[in-house]
Amino acid sequence: MPGSLCDVLPAAAALLGAPEAPDRLALADRVDADRVDRVGVVLVDGMGWHLLPELAGSAPLLASVLAGETGQLLELACTFPSTTPTSLVSLGTGTRPGEHGILGFTVNVPGTDRVLNHIRWRDDPPHDAWQPLPTWFQRLRRNGTSARVVLPEWFIGSGLTDAAYRGAEFRPTAAIDDYVQRFSDELRAAPGLVYGYTADLDTAAHVAGIGSPPWHEAAARADTLLARLVESLPPTATLLVTADHGGLNVPETARFDLDADARLSAGVRVVAGEPRVRYLHTAPGAAADVQAAWTEVLGTAAEVYVRDEAVATGVFGPVTPTNLPRIGDVVVVCTGDAAVLATEHEPPEAARLIGFHGAASPAEMAIPLIVF
Image (cartoon, rainbow, N blue to C red; front, top):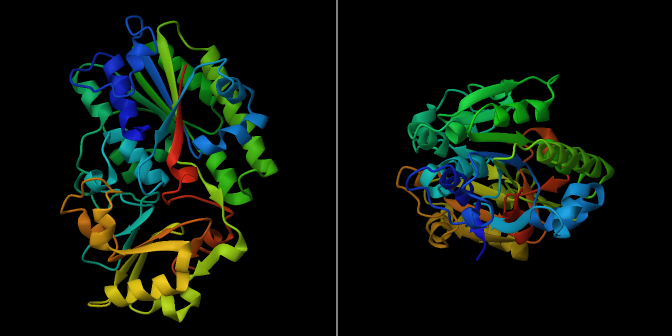
């Protein structure tokens, strides 16, 4: 079984001497652990394991990694749903979504009809109430080890930033900054952990599609960023490169719109999740009927569960009682290349996207870890 995204920061912390930090990825056997006093972790949004061969055509460093000439390549799995907010908090806390509670791109706030978009989340709900678990950045700093994040300045103050990176020393960057230089300067400045993130590849996948010219251009930019980081590594540093999810293109013929089909909207009170994983919060007593209707309409395009069935599959990991109602009364997990749009509930640009992720297919869940 592959390792998990949840294992990355604990393994990095173990390299840095943090007590009780489990190295489930055996990083100490892959690097000269006695010489390592600083670790860089860079997450490339959307760089799925199964996309690497196609990416390599525009990415010389990644091509070299795939050929076994540079770095060490491991296959990991992200957590479910395979979506950025969930994965970032799984990375930061080292725990699965059922425990940390960031259970999707959007979720219903229990007891209300409100849908919380985790990307746009600011102060409500309170950060430490909605996601109370400690992060590995906090654990490192409590151990006296520096833990810094180099991120765009507009990330400051967001709920997702706090949920995923709580306790880290924030090093904000502006659009005009040389990001690689800023990250490299931090890595050279002091021992410890330095974390970075780039969203360029994922944005191109969503807007233009995986395999499109803009996607390959974004791949080339990401590869250049990584190559410069590798070239600038201090002699006592290790660089870990990973991702939050993969993805796939969804053709027009595989799209359903719950707001355009009365059979799908009947009995549904709140719509959350995202196109590849829908959380449906139903009117009282309607869950079984909603499950039956969605099963009939979507057929083999999705697995449709009531909440208890979905939790029993184990995909969320252990689910705390507080987090349980954030999962829909009915959970719809798309299979194949299908997606369920919600044109009256979500911004119109969501329906125009080409690349998607969120569900449990290998194309979405498998991610790399590259050790330099």
